[in-house]
Amino acid sequence: MSWEMPLTDDERFLMEAFEANFERLREESGRSLAPFIKESARQQVLLYYRRLRELAAQVEETEVRLVLPEQTSPAGRQYTLEGVVDIVEDGSSTVMYDLKTYLDADAARDHVEPHYRQLNVYAHIWKGLRGRQLDKVAVIATRPTRPLYRALRAGEPAKIQAAMEAWAPVLEVPVDGNVVAEVMESFGRVVDLIEDRKFSPPSLEVLKASSRPDGKVPFAQDVCLNCDARFGCASYRQLVRAQSPGRADQALRDASADFGGDAEKQDWRDSGVTATARIDVEDEGTSA
Ligand code: SF4
Image (cartoon, rainbow, N blue to C red; front, top):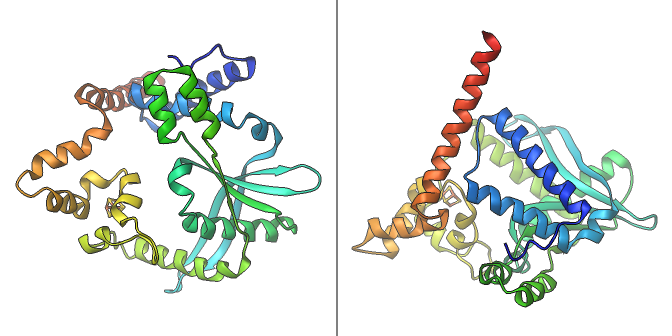
């Protein structure tokens, strides 16, 4: 592919690690990815590394597990909060990064609120565990931006280079300890809903309304488009039907087209079957 200039030694190592990790996860979980999804993930890893190589080189601690045990939900249930972050310390400052692989930085830049809430809780846990302040907290949105995807599809090196340079994946989030109590309370409410087995999606009205008090983007666009469960979700299906009266079935087929063409969907189904069959065979081999 045109974006694949010759790999450096670092990048070759990264791609080998990607393959090894993919195989390990496939064997552990019994699930696989369709080839086009795997290729897209591989592309994302490589592009992200090329864009943020300098920052990646400074990371001191990766996959730092933050644990806040013995929390109590509004209904009195005990729960533990966990998060995973990366830490950069350069001697004069300490910065916490949270990687979001589904996030497009351009789309997220004006809507950092959900990340602001989550990261401030992580910062609070970090302070409790390490006894040190954080100087900065940021999200890294590793999903390539739309202009970059367009340039990659066009395969024009100059456009790809320009889109890479315009891509700003680091979104800084203000540190504000005052928000922690309220966010913990909302996490607790979610714990209670899960334990009470209340999984109904929000109503159609919620999907049509803005996802934030002062926002303009509807919940369906802001949240549902990132939700893997949307094609099985009654409210989302209702919304697609309501927006396309008289051609509901076609509208649902069109809406699911971003999951790839028929061949890609078949690949997806086959990859799950292959991975499961492989595990079954290996299990039988082991027990024989
Ligand atoms: S599509 Fe997903 S995010 Fe949207 S309402 Fe349904 S379950 Fe919730």
